[in-house]
Image 1 (cartoon, rainbow, N blue to C red):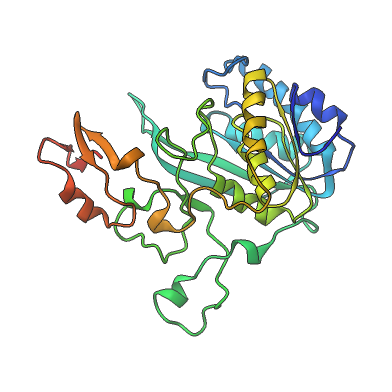
Image 2: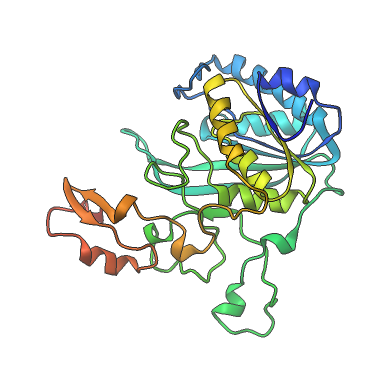
Length: 321
């Protein structure tokens, strides 16, 4: 097994070839078993079959992790509870945090509320010995920025466990100097978009996880390569990396992204709330079939509303842009 490569291989087979206790950090964004269309994987298994499959690749993850290693799991609502139990009770990991990654442009549903979040479970092998780089992920505290309170730590504080992506889409009370996590979901118009895979993680979100849970030179593994963002971010941040991908086409695309990535290159996107979501291509978007110049993300929402041409843009009292 060589590091700094993407392998076109089933992750269970691949994880079996990883030397036991050799990986510092694993990030997994597995299929959610909700019928999503992938290139070669059937994302609609019987529930017990899906859970048994999770136990198999999960056991491979636990085996590969160092005694002080860390595992982050991204999963949707449908099986979040079951997978948390599998990794805690069946596979023996300890859950440090249950993070909610909130985003707009979620899945619209006819008979229930729109799905606009993903669960991020932070597991460790040993709750007394694991990597957690606090200085790398501190954010300014409201006590310091808002209230000018001298008791506030000038170095900032740890972020909360609810991560909000687009501040322009939430109430005005959420300001750039508050301690909520803002990252954009990777939409189709964003420069960051790889283009061949619909479930792409933002580089800034992965950057926070990799900075917090590993050090330069350590090894990051992703069993479900997908669009390749985990490996790209790991390379940019000076980590060793290894990934597995079942689809030959996806693996080819990941390799192309890695070939174009340089160590030390900045992450795409912004961790600054006022600029966290890129504007659409060429600054133009469509609203109710009309071409409208997109506002910059730094503008307050109330000013952006004034730029939209007149028309029936309200739906049940909520601005629908």
